[in-house]
Amino acid sequence: MGSWSRWDLDDLGGSVTSVVFVHGTGVRAKSYEKSFARVVSGLGRVRADIRVVRCLWGEHHGASLGLGGVSIPVRAKSRGAGGDELLDEDDPLAVWALLEVDPLAELREFTEAAHDDGEETGFAPGRVDPWEAVADKVRGLTLEPVAADTATNGESLAHLIADLAPHLDEAADRVADEISDGLGGASPVDGIEAIVARAVYALAVQRAEGPYGDDEPLAVDGADRDTVVGALTDQLGGTDRGGFVVGAAKTVAVRALNSSLSPLSSLAHTFRGGITKKSVPASGDILRYQVRGAGVRAAIREAVRDAIAAGGGPVVLLAHSLGGIACVDLLAEPDPPAGVDLLVTVGSQAPFLYELDALTALRRGEPLPGGFPRWINVYDEQDLLGFVGEKVFPDRVTDLRVNTRQPFPRAHTSYFAHQRLYELLAPELPK
Image 1: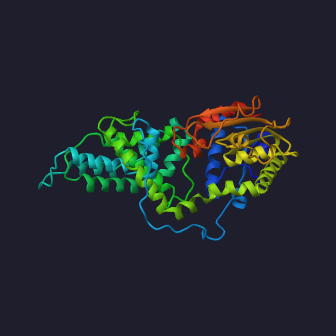
Image 2: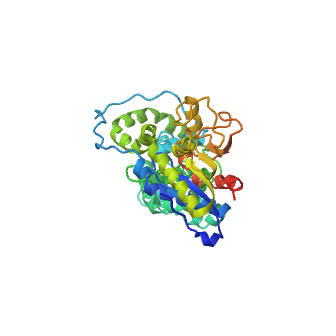
């Protein structure tokens, strides 16, 4: 089950500290390897003496639709009613949450506003439509300026560029076509550059995650996202490098946010089958763990045993989401694996489940066992699946807050792209 990242024991001179990386819900081999590489890289930058060990349990103990999804009802197309709560255009997380669903939402609202507020110039022989000039700039967008600066901005930015690069041209072409088709003949209007940059970025991310969104969500730190969007904005001649929505674009953002609420509910119903199948690994793993969790805990126990046998030093469990729940359950059992010096849970629901009295090995009201290792719990306030533990287990848990600057749900998947996480953990890891 466990395997080393890149170092030989002889090279490190005797025993070494091993970090066993336990993934969370919905993760399978392909996405685990990407996360594992991020952890190896991130820890390697702050603690070169650390050895990272695999613990991939999802392939054998994760959920799947064993009958091909025949339990999902087929729904006739119908228009659903959305909520009536308005979103705030001053909140960048709200706008990014919309662009996660519909990357062109802002651009379409900009187009409508341009036609509402401006005079139509139409086609004139020999005249170059100014919007075609904008579209040409969009088609020429490149990641080269920001790629040249990755040494300064860190490896997480390099990972993001590598993920987006194969899809940037296709995304830029799609946005350019939208400009040509929607704005051709309209009078020039200021404020489109940042909107276009966000649309291109959001489309590239969407394509990087698979044609049907069936790949694991990209782990993206908000600072890296803003760096890429800022570089694209600069190439288009815009100046919204550090801000978000300015000038005329501000009204566009709020129109896009609030006009999109109602259709989202309808779309969710219309595409329920695809949405459900996509969500099975994530939600199904949680449900399956509640009744078949022994296999997951056995896999973690085996990885710890292998790490101790091969590394000879202290062991750290670094566990994300559901993996953190499984580690807490395992370490609270009457016969926990020996040799674990530190538990680090990241974006985990273990404290919440304890408060619900829903942990497997520990009832609400029972203290952590005396031999339970030191526990650090990492959370992001934007991650609705991350919880705090200091008040749940006083003097037994240390909470560390990070800020990936991402909206939920991407905040839940972006911890390991956030270099600050590794900087906070470096002095806590045993030697």
